Length: 114
Image 1 (cartoon, one colour):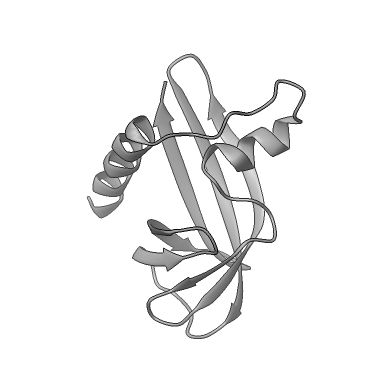
Image 2 (image 1 turned 135 degrees about the horizontal axis):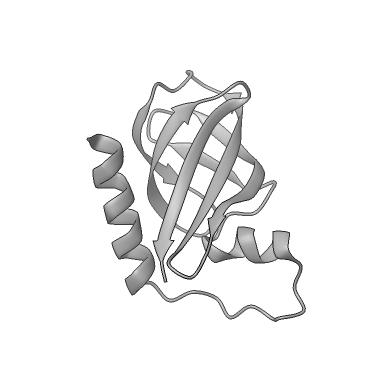
């Protein structure tokens, strides 16, 4: 239930947010990471003190109705995170993400209705 609320909030936020203009010449990976503002190498710190680094961005669904991306995070320092919603602070802005534990650290799935 918590994941459903997060996905609905993320879709609403994405629909109302201004997105960067992306050149058609940009690579597919660059577009994927720029669409939600996450790039490989970005570091984010959660309110609990855990430092995570974006280790991968991949498209999990991309059709006429929905765009969905998986964001992989590598755990760098601080306590391990359980499944749940966390407030994350990056270099540009703060955001809330629903994270699930993974082998490297954590994973988030972001969706946007087109």
